Amino acid sequence: MDLPIREAVTVVLECGDDIFMVRRQPGLASFPGYWAFPGGKVDPDDALPPPRAGALFQGFETRLLEALARELREEVGFDLDHAAAGGEVTALHLFGTALTPAIVPARFNTWFYRVHLRNRPQIVLDTGEVDRGRWATPATLAQEYAEGRLLLAPPTIAAIRLLAAGGGRQPGLIALDTHHEQRLPLIESIAGLRLIPVRSNTLPPAIHTNCFVLGDEGTHRVLVDPSPWNDDELDALYERVRGMGIGEVFLTHHHPDHHERADVLARRLGVGVALSADTSERIAEFYPPFFEGLTQRIVGDGEEIVRWLGRPVRALAVPGHDQGQLALMPDDRAWCIVGDLIQGIGTVVIHKPEGNMRAYFDSLQRIIDLDPKVIVPSHGMAMGTAFRLQETLRHRRLREAAVLQLHQAGNSLDDMLKSIYQGLDPRLLPLARQNIESHLDKLREEGAVV
Image 1 (spheres, rainbow, N blue to C red):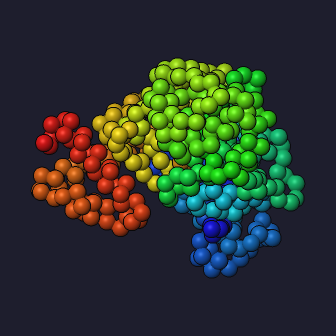
Image 2 (image 1 turned 120 degrees about the vertical axis):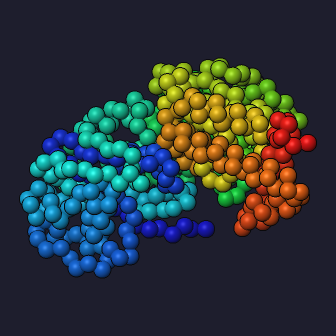
Image 3 (image 1 turned 45 degrees about the horizontal axis):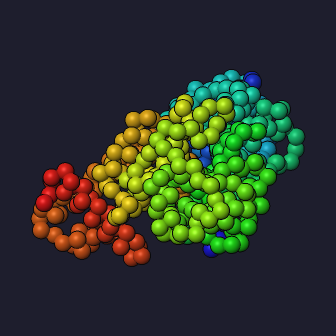
C-alpha cells in the first residue's frame, strides 16, 4: 500500500561561515535525538496568508514560505519577517528537496531553504521539540559525522556535505536524498553503520527487519540479521551486499524474522555464521538443515565481532525477549544495535520458552546503565540517547503493577487482557496474553504472587 506523502520545509540559518542546527528531543516519534535543521510539516493554514511583499520573498510559493516562517518562530524563536524588515536577512533561496522512502511510516517531500544573516540572531528553543542548538561550520559538522559523533537523517548529511563543498548556491534544486528510488535503500544515519531495511515475515505493524553491514573498509565485515521474506527479496539483498566484502553473517537471536533465508545467503556469499550458543541450538532444533555446509562461530558476552571506524564492536548478552539474544556496541558506546530489546515499530513480546520477563528487565537496565549515545532497534529507525529504553522499562513496570493489582483482585487472564489491552488489533491479542503470562511468571519468581 502506497503511503500518503505530505510536504515539509527545513531551513539552514547561515551567518558568516557557520550554520545553525538543533537536536530533536529524544522522546519524539519522528527522528528522535537526530541533529537537524529547524523545520516541520506544511499545514493547511499555511496557504491562507497573502504573499509577502518585498524583493527578498519574490518567486517563492506562499504556503511553503509561510510554513518556513512559522516553523522558525515556533522552534527557535526567530522572526523571519522582522529580521527581513530590519535588513538582517541578506538572501533567501531554495536549494534542495528530499523525498522520504516508502519504508518510513510517515512520508514527506521536504523543501530545503537557506537564510543568509548579517548577524547571529537570538535563539529561543522550543524545548518541546528540540533540546539543544549550535552554530558550527559545515566542514566541522561533516567531520563530526565522519567520526561517528552525529546522528543525522540522510538528506541532512547530503545538505551538510554540499554546503561544506561550497555548493547549493547555484539556481536549481538538488535532490538531497535518492533512497526512495532504491529497492533496498542503504541508510547510514551514523557513519559506518549501514542499515538495509529488508522486508521480512515479522509481526505487524512492522514489515521490515533491519539488516546491518558493519566493518571498516578492507577488514572483516559482518552482515547482521539478513531475513528476507521471500526468494525475490533474497535475490535483491544478495545483489545489494555481494560487493561489500562480507566475511560473516551475524545473528542477534533465533526468531525467524532475524534469520529466515540467512543460511541461503551465507552459502551464496561463501561465508560462515556467528551467533550465541543458545541461538545455534534453537535454530538447529527449529530448522535442522540451516547449518548444512556452514561454519559456525559461537559468540559470548564481551567478544569482539568487528571493527567500526577502527574501534572494537563487542557482543553483549541481552536475554529476556530471547534467551540467546546479543546486542552489538562499540567500546566508546557511540551506538548500540539492541535487536528486539525494544522496537521502533510495535512492541516486544516476551513469551515462553525462550522469553523471560525478569531477564528482560535486567537487560533493559544493563543497556540503560551503559548509556549508548544512539540505540538502533531491529524494527524501526535509530534513536538518539537511551531515552526509549528508559521509557520502555518504565512502561513495563507500570504494566506489571496493573497485572499484579488485577491478579490480586481475582481477575482471570482473559479479564486482564480486556482491561489492559483495550482497542488492540485482534491479531495481536494472543501475543499480549503471552506478555501478561510472562509478567505473572516474573511476579511468581519474585514471590509477589503464588
